Amino acid sequence: MKKVRLLLTFISTLWLFTSFSAFSTDYPLPPDNSRLIGENVTYTVPNDGRSLEMIAADYKIGLLGMLEANPGTDPYLPAPGSVLTIPTQMLLPDTPHEGIVINLAELRLYYYPKGENKVVVYPIGIGQLGRNTPTMVTSIIQKIPNPTWTPTANIRKHYLEEQGITLPAVVPAGPDNPMGLFALRMAAGGGVYLIHGTNANFGIGMRVSSGCIRLRAADIEALFNQVPKGTRVQVINQPIKVAVEPDGKRYIEVHQPLSHTDKDDPQTMPIAKTKVINAFIKTPETNADVVKQAIARRSGMPVLVNTGPEANERVPEAIMPQSASSQPAAPVTDAEPPQSLQ
Image (cartoon, rainbow, N blue to C red; front, side, top):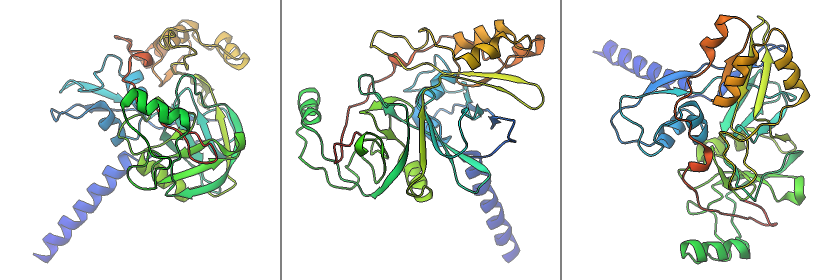
């Protein structure tokens, strides 16, 4: 009987370990001449009434990332029995593998722990239209456990007019604080920009904040505990990433660009291309037609674009594209002194 209990304990422990590993955000770094990490997986939606956000949270994916990979999916109630692609394969941004790298267009944060051969990837929420998160190179200057929230006059006015809520001058730390339980202050802009948590169960992988970077509660706690003060932070805005792998395979990863006005449709608006991307496309080894399809599809996943028939096997099917502008809106929240954005 004792042996049976030990066996059951071992099986249970192994199941927990493999389940956690499946949802891990840690990826081993590829060789220096490679940028491709992870593998996409599929998920069959059970008949349990869970939203797409809840599924995305299980796999550490943002909501818009799930919609890019699975256009036409109902974000409130995905159809039971439907098969979703979980976009856990990606190209690392073309930046130094140092500190924190945030790519606004893909709504992801990459953390390269010093001295470790890995990268940790988190989905994020960023500044909404009109309150954009700026591109910058900066650093972490303060780690704030249990932050308080001091809404600005404009935010209090907004809450009162739009939601009928009278906010206090200061929201104390705790579960009702929109800042969450942990915050990392960046030096840029006099310290107004933070990487912080949230007390909402939506909005990650969307443009919802007043300029700060939001993470889910478990993710910001993990990041807060890993990141030392002084860590370099680079914020970029690159909807297109490309890579040539050591085996000669050529990949392009295209995300919906950030809209500039409320009339923009991120699924169809033009995407500016850098010299590096144009050179990649014009190379004879790149299938320009497949690139064109990938840019139109905007799946947020790496697509193989080598010349030859094998390239088409990696182009995700384009069905019923759903633009970011059609997603449910989230309430606006703001500020923690000194005039910090939320």
